Amino acid sequence: MRRSPLVLIEMPLEFRIQRILQEYVTDMLTGFQMKHSEQGFEYFSAYLYNSLLRIQKRLGLERYKYLHDS
Image (cartoon, rainbow, N blue to C red; front, side, top):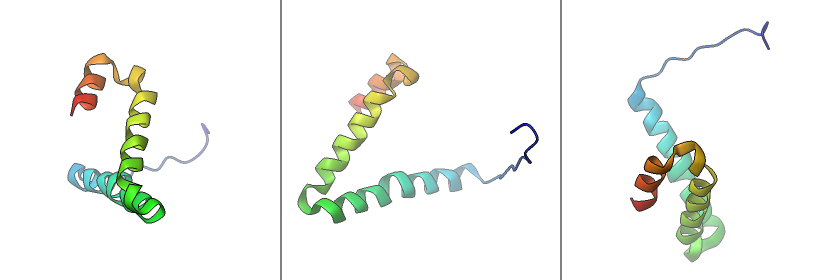
C-alpha cells in the first residue's frame, strides 16, 4: 500500500453532501420501499436506528444523544 499511487479527488462540500444524501438516504429508502412495500419506511427507520447504535461509542455520548433525539 505504501508504494501504491495516491489519488486525491476534490469536490465542493455541497456536492459531497448532496451525493451522500442521495446514496445513503434517498436511494436506500427507495430500495427498502421497493422490497418491503408498505413497511419499507419502518424497516428503513429500524435500519438507521440500528446503525446508529453500532457507532454509538465512536460518536461519543453528546453526538449520539443529539442524533438519537432528532
